[in-house]
Length: 327
Image 1 (tube, rainbow, N blue to C red):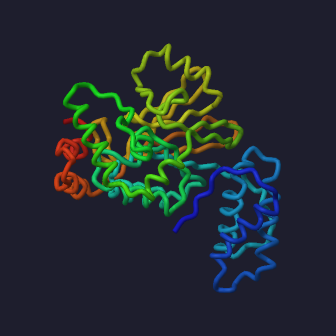
Image 2: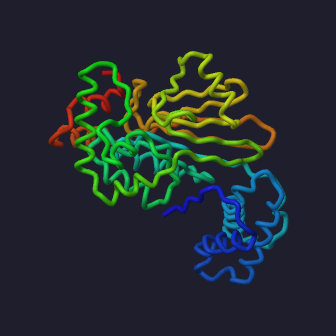
């Protein structure tokens, strides 16, 4: 199982201990004595000291040590050879769709990014709330609280959602109360611990991760939102890169010097493409942040069937995931 690190600022000995523990997994065959491993780790960590990637030193040092071990060249020479690109995976709005979540996590694992973040809304609408929560909990992925996590975790009577008509609102209430009844108390307790936002720096860029917007967890930042509103948000966001979800429609655009990244939805897309969606960000010093919106196929039929057989969930939600919200 992959280990994911949150950004951190800790002393060098702690970083060495952390990286050594993780890198030791590569040395179970005894090909690298502990003292040599310790020396290599210390050299790798020291080579990153004072760089613009200090919040990711444990991740980048581990990557360098692993590469040297696998190549059989862990001789501690040339650690400074080339600056490593920091790659960050983000995903959001799983909404009780465990199959879509599993597919996205597998795709992320295949990319082996330096950090992984979940922007919230683990539950709601889908038939597998506990299974979806477990996938995040067991990996220890840093996760932001979405409005649906708030509604279910605190047993609220409203999820903070915006509905277009009374029929949609009625279905939304059915979903909220069904999910509240199905989610275990242990998982509700976990939802209550989720973060309001995540901030960090990578390669000299400031990142701010939220569920809806920097102003409210349930504010919708659609691509066609009034440009004046988006400009005001950019001007007050105190970040270089703003990453968010909530709308279930991915988009990327620079506004007033701030890169806006909506990473779409894993479990309930609304842009007409039913595949699960996530985003991969690549950060290098002195260069614009590169963003890829990734699409992942998954077993939609199994999740649609689970919704239709769940006593209390409207069949409409099954049609939504089958059509990518185009129904």
